[in-house]
Length: 281
Image (cartoon, rainbow, N blue to C red; front, side, top):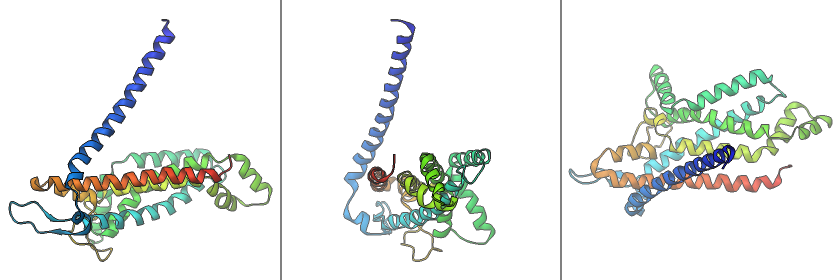
């Protein structure tokens, strides 16, 4: 066996080992959550709000307030972040911005992507205190929007960069302006990647706890206003698991959150594959 063959075999073993570690970790997480959560799941978990528990008894009721809170926080935040991100991603292309400046903006977006989400929460908390607001759905929504903007923007940017240059040149030759080409040609061609980025941001937002820990607060009630505090599934899991008698219910909440994130991921794959049929290759 020569040196080149030995190197190839070593790296092949490393690659296979890496795949096994990732899949094994995923299977272990799924197995742990399903084993402990599915057995504790019942219909009242998703149809009732928490009720006061007697001393020495596990928490009563369900987690409907956290499910509703997660939806109220993540869906509007993803919508606002997507609107901002699509504008940034289109403007980063060479038709509008010089490559050097665009690359600097991309670097800053990558830095923002890597910032721990707790920093976004503390930043919004400082603003919230300075203007005299309390924790609420609105502030939590703003924190999640800031968290998702760099994620969705970079995904959209990479999708838009894959659009064939010939399509844009063809649009320009027919008299289209830069704005018309970006909105009517580039956006439609890159739509599968744009949609995948939006759903990726939604999955990150609905599963994040640190950014809403101080901003959205916690409540056992379903919020009736965007100025009310609300629980979310990640914060509900944290509160339940910190109570010894509530750990089984925490696993059930984690199981529900895992199912939601899986649905978002599968939906992203299916929709991306469907819309890819209609793009020009």
